[in-house]
Structure formats: structure tokens, C-alpha cells
Image 1: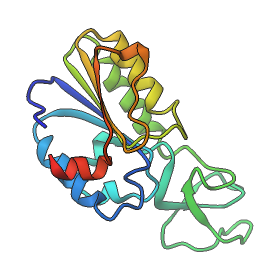
Image 2 (image 1 turned 180 degrees about the vertical axis):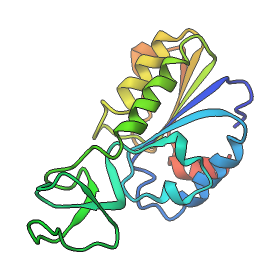
Image 3 (image 1 turned 90 degrees about the horizontal axis):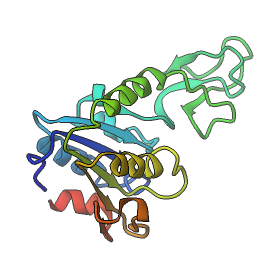
Image 4 (image 1 turned 45 degrees about the horizontal axis):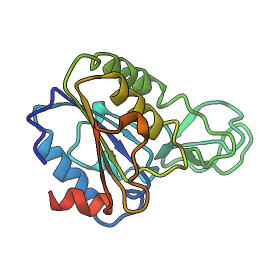
Length: 192
């Protein structure tokens, strides 16, 4: 895959990457392809492997949270704790990972990066944009699938490539502006 034809690259990382043994290899492959490129990544993975890769951490937003911070299961204090902390000092309950799996997920941690992502997307409108969607299911379509399709449909210079082992279909909204690849997205990235 050659990114040189695009001004901007918006990448959506989905569940095919979560807990995949080859994910780090795929992330580092992407990093090598994105050197000196204007990109932003939205990740649905909560395993945080992406943050161990060579990708620029200031260009990644993970709205579902991850395993880099903890929180009280009741969000009693509304704050996050270091990963090494085990008990909430207020209620004495055992801390849980700060991600959407927590009953009272504290979303504050990703909000600044989400705002940065939204601003970045707004600046791509009249640019040659590649929206690269990798392994995204329909579990949270409002985060990547639907917004990516909308971005591509509104930008006459945009193109969508959707790589997914089971759900590569494109909507009518992006017909003629997209490519569907029925393949495991991790293996596809490793192989490019």
C-alpha cells in the first residue's frame, strides 16, 4: 500500500486487532508506511497494544478506553488511577480498567484527544483523503463505520478502503469511492 497519493490518512482500527498476536507487527508496519504522513487513528481496541507500537501516540484516540489506567467500578470519585493502584481510597473497592467494560466508564481521559481528532477531520474536507478501515465490526458503528462513510461521501477527493474478514461490505453512500477487501485486516497489513 502506497500512501504517497494522499494528503491525509484517517485510520480506523477495529476488533480484529484486539488481542491479536500479530497486532504489534501490523501497527509497526503501519508506522513505517506513515512516516512523514498526516494521519490520525481511531482505535476500538482496549488491549492498548497500539500504544506499544511505533505509531505517534499524539495521533491516536481510543474512545473505548483501555488498560493504561484504572478507575473505581462505581466512579465514586470520578478520577483515574495509575495502573499499579489496586483499591479506591474512598470506597475501598477494587479498581477496574478504565474502559467501556467498566459499569460506570469514566470517559474523561480520551475526550481531549477526541477533540483533537475532530479538528483534524474538519481540516481534511478539501484534501485528498484515504479513510482506511481495518477490522471494524458493527458493535460500535457510530464511532468508525458510519462517520468514515459520511466523511468519504462529503469529500469529493476522499476514498475508503474497508478491510474486514467478515464484514467488508460498503454502503451505497460510498459506492464508487470505496474498495471492500474480504481478508483479516491484521494479516492484510502485515502482508502489504
